[in-house]
Amino acid sequence: MDKVKNGQGKKPHKALKIYGIWSLAVVLVNVAAWTVPGLCDWYIRHIFLLWVNTYGRLMDLFTFSVGEWMLAIGVGLVVIALVLGLVLLVLRIVRGVRSHCRRTPDTGCPVWIRRYYLFFAWTLLAVCTIMTLNCSLLYHASTFSEQYFLDSGEEYTLEQLTEVRNMVVEQCNALAPEMERDENGRILYNGTARDMQEAAIRAMQKLGETYDQLDGYYPHPKPFAASDFFCQQYMQGYFFPFSMEANYNDVMYIMNKPDTFCHELAHLRGYIYEDEANFISFLACIQSEEPIFVYSGYLSVLNYLDNDFYQAIGRDQEAYLAQPRISAQVLEDNVFVTEEEWERINGSALIATQTVDQVSDVLRDTSLKAFGVNDGVLSYNRVVRLLLEWHYYSDLAE
Image (cartoon, rainbow, N blue to C red; front, side, top):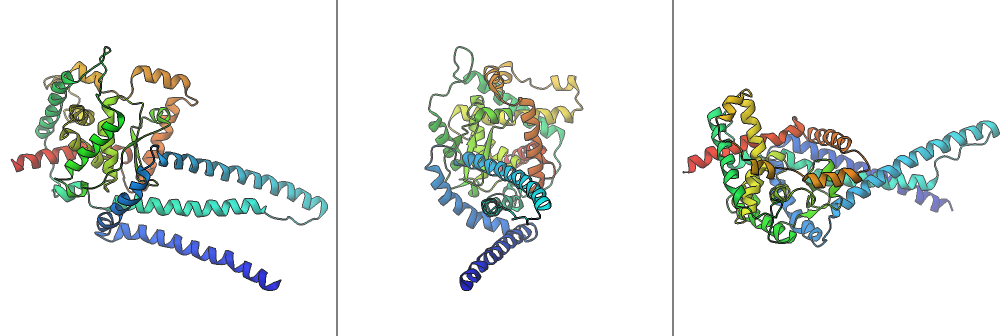
């Protein structure tokens, strides 16, 4: 009897030791990512892309978003942990009262609650490990600009910003009339969702011929099952590190889909910064053979450029109106969700869209800053500098 008890007593101690070593390893990997130059570049080239080619291929066999279900399960596990914590608190209070009144000892935490928290602790460690390997390490790698534009740090002029802004406006104005539309003026795509997904993969692989890190295997982008809820967050897509999947909002207007597909796929090649994914998506789309992709690419950067230009001229209306105007058709095409869809979403929403959006913005901003992106969600706007660098290097190449 004594030997059996002693043997069982060693198991928790051994598990705790393993947990401690594993946790320390995760911490040390993160510290190394911040401090060892070139480590994350090496990791992306030799290990991260291996996960994409293996685990990513496995997840691509599922037609639904595995990551979305993982996220839902994760939320459920957290809720259960909180409820059990409340149950444990109530039990301790009740037992404390009984112990005081009857002078009986407190029997402690029920075994089933301890087992759940043990399971929860190991699950949390696994999540931290996956987030480290498939997400946080990517934030410390060389940027796209450093790899391919040498990141000269040059300051660009208002004249250059104006030139790029006007080029994009003119391209959008020219492409809008060429799109096939229905009787309500909405753009049509002559193909299935799968056709568009594969067109995005082809566009990214074609871009990989110029920028080698983008070359290779890509899984198919997958729609969110809860696209209505992601609309309330004004979220077009999401890269799930847990499942190596590129996911997109299936309810948003069709013109957002091509550039969102390419944006999320860019994350799967190690480009985790949002401005870089925006830029890569732009390049992939405008080099595509699909007209809807080309138009989507130019539309995807239109607001960033136009807003920066307006700010740069001091919000001078007269100076703004002196430049090429964005056509009424382009303005109509440049929407996130149609009015009809918004009415349907808001009519059936359990939580007000404004509330969901505010909470989502805070969480997204906080998570980006936690990974070292100091300007949080504003980092999306940095795509303008990449566009100016690209335009500058294109001129040099000519």
